[in-house]
Length: 601
Image 1 (cartoon, one colour):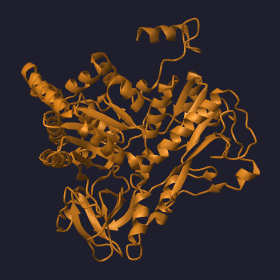
Image 2 (cartoon, rainbow, N blue to C red; image 1 turned 45 degrees about the horizontal axis):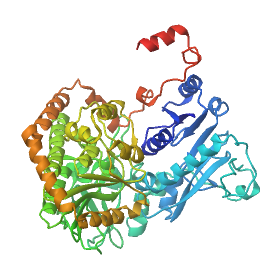
Image 3 (cartoon, helix red, strand yellow; image 1 turned 90 degrees about the vertical axis):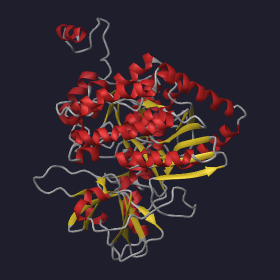
Image 4 (tube, helix red, strand yellow; image 1 turned 30 degrees about the vertical axis):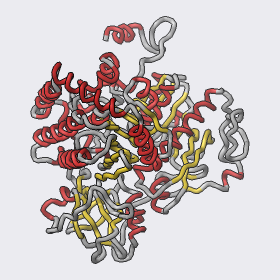
């Protein structure tokens, strides 16, 4: 079918739906416009179906009355309201769901095409959104699209939960048994999110922080300023006066509660009237000179199993397998994070293992250089240069590891330099549902991380050119077909690490593994003789240096727009497929003259 995705942003869920529908043979376009611009786009494209994976505004009447429009609501059947997932996390719900319903005049009240339940473990909202919620959402969307495609899509009176293959019609919410389940939850405002440090337990504080971890954050008073707190993790040893800052660790701050303490990785200053928009930064960097003298709380790389604390890099061993996991906020890999990860990687390589797994955590694997830290730097060009060299050092260490096999285990999405870091490994394993964006073009960059070696080596020159120029998300299914990924692991997000460890133990025990390691060493020696790694790195960095230190390069404006979350004024052309053409050879509704201009372009 011709399907149009309408979204407020091309976010992780929209990308996942986009890739999955394309994999299933549909022609899929994206529109990020709203209001009159959206009406015009729908009139031009004339899609058979509209799907809205993430929409912050109402669909115009002129759209949903013309084309069936399916809305993805992150709540179970009967749930309504704009803060559905936020409230579920803050209330401590253990199960939740996703509902796909048809747009009508009343918000969230249209016929239900599909509803899928899911677990809700105690995690941050954004983590849940990219994992359990996204899994349920995709299942519900595919089911709804299948039902719509059957053409048996008149509203049907049936019992809730009846989803037999032959029962494809949507479920009217006007049925008495559905009306009894309807709960409309109001927008969750900051007064309800507010933390009372003198009374809230650690569990209460964590629920509030997790319900707002990426957006909007929890507004709080700290060191004579107002800050939005982003992210929260329990600390089991440090104690102090409630609300007191106790220590720092790798950019995060530890703050005491009435019965314990929590780590807060990121802060964002409240925007003052007339000031520029603000953005999240590592907490210690955001506080700057306001931060009192606090000790840097040490933490072991290999933590005891019973420790409850926060650290962004961890190591553990299972016999012949080393597991080096890391989790950076938003997948951003800043200069200091890359350097610390490189130190940890070298320490892991000193252990007597034959397989080293890099990653293995749920949520983001990595998204490349830390654009927020770069934007906040006194010299963004200089910080960009330091960051790209730090991540290149890490990738080079992976590429030159010849005494063991290295597996990149992606439990979450990867893009740009994070995706290229994964490709440096001997094998790439992904949880089913991961979205890959192995390109840099949309940020005005040519990229580094040795991608000019590793990407063509895996997929060939033609596929490499398509990936980096089309700049579209790639599903795990397609990544396996292309050769980007060796293995897709179908499992819940919480079980990915255990599955990866088990498979790595099997790999280490295979009789052919020692010979494979020997062949790997010989292959690197041949590579160094023919075209050394430094040649690839120098060529890539030469182009990046020009971009970083020329203020007129598009990268700088694109970075600022991304960091400050500027509104998208128009849908990028790469997200729009060619318009369907009539037998006369031109898109319907266009004049011959316009069609001729389009063809010449």
